[in-house]
Image (tube, rainbow, N blue to C red):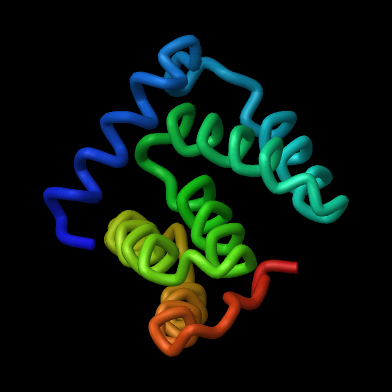
Length: 126
């Protein structure tokens, strides 16, 4: 997926979830609901919640990383890789102020390599 296609995906997500106000939502509740749905195998609800999280936290990688996890689980590896690449770009910004460990980036990059090989992403953050 090219940057242009990812940008279109992101714009559609922002349009579809326009009721979400960035930086004004209860991100913890959205994340928890998404993870519960994911663990229960309700991927439709999990996808919705992870997209809401990504829209509510535009400068954080977690919503996108959860989407990459979901898409790798459901066999959408190309989409998972494109989203994981964007999550890594966002996460690397946190290196500038030392608010993230380089090991986190390394784990994310390992997951990117896995998904490019058609393998499921691992939840390293558990």
